[in-house]
Image (cartoon, rainbow, N blue to C red):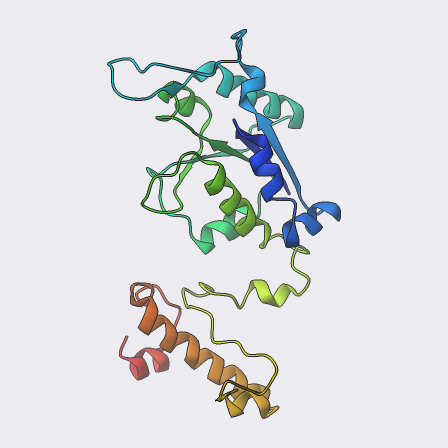
Length: 239
């Protein structure tokens, strides 16, 4: 899978996405991540990419031309128009199901805004998806683009060393992940739940399922409306 991140700060993206699991996946050829510097495509001799907004107001607005030409450079190179995601608080909030959906794409373009935003005309021209990572404002879209890239990459086959870990994490089935434990069996007076030491995989799975549901009810009750529960579980937990 190929990520093309349109940004004014390519070094920020490159440094943040070439380590750990994602970095190893890039080395193996499972992913490619390129940061396209929007500033390289401006026609202004001073490399300026922004100007004052029409109608007045504080701040500056990124101009349409350099954004469009940066996007077009990717489209011309890969030979088609892929889904183009604009990172903005105005989009729907990013979720795990969205990560799975995007992971099916061969290419994704992620557009990072800055200043007071981007000229609306180029957004209308190139953007297919508007996505937010939460109801707050960041200095730019780079951190949001890195969040999406990380979450989506984990859903690409082969990226995780144990593919099961991608299907049992938090938000699978709209439930939080169950508690995890490692050695030693006792630490600071706290013992690992005995059932995890039993060797009975069916009972362990049942315990983990129960813990996921209870933890979601306690910490993220808003998820329960969409949680994938059996009729028996719904009755048991009063959902």
